[in-house]
Image (cartoon, rainbow, N blue to C red; front, side, top):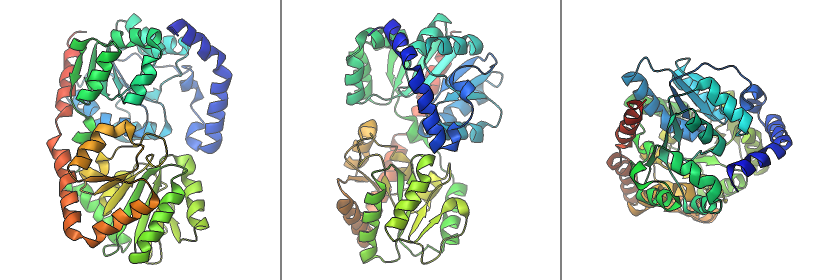
Length: 422
């Protein structure tokens, strides 16, 4: 498949894209507006730099980089795009009008062409592996310098790229620089055809997560407001449908030995908040929703984290964490957030999107891979019983994060290099 065939196929799928938006809008309020942005019908201003993220995780990782660019180049105009309401909310929260923000349009040729013509960036930074053939094509037609930042590429994704070389090879070879998260990711990009001299191993920006004392104190205050200082507290973070029941089964097993244990269950997507609450009620457990601010009592067994932007706070208020999307075949989410606040971490076997980071934490003893709710409960209980093992895992988690900082400096250096060429 080449780009022309890809473009034609997208046009044929246009009715399905509209249906997709309609279904998402039915499930989640965040998708009910701003359709003009999805089809590049919103008027936009020209800016010097375009930075594209996908969703909340990529946006959080990009925020320190964007802020450093703003500090070093205060006159640089910036557009930040995302594809999800959660990512959009993070941009608004972090930059409050200091950047132009919208959703990235669908990769229909006329949408991408109109979008690039309007924004006409001199430089573009694309986070992780959010590569779209038409977007990249029209950026290069505009003579934009394009950096793939914080680039990760699992073997599964590399295999998928390999199946369509006529579509993907021109796109990869047109990139001006790739800042790979790991040696493995760098090797995969080069094997796919990216120029060796354009690939630099920089590490993951997610290691450069900064957590100050004020944040930690606020998380402790939240736990105290719940009167849970002396209760075992664990977070099931970024969990998906298919994992809700597994988390509740694990929590029931934990409560058999620790009856006062409290679980904070945070669904990955807002449209699943109600389903998570329903699952808790069907399990005959006492639940409260964080959004209602009704408070947590000694009788509360589960808090459903149905708010945006508080997951890291929940991690900092807890003792242990499970990171979701890993007991189902989804690829997983970032285990560095709980590790950065010193939590021992559990994940399931399906963590390929964060394979290198997961292995690094596991080798140091900060993370354990579990394959069932039973094993998850057993691991949680073991660390509650064995305080020495808990302390070792907690210290290892913080040590791994501290030892791997520095990606921000390296990737900012690449950005500076590209900015100097325009």
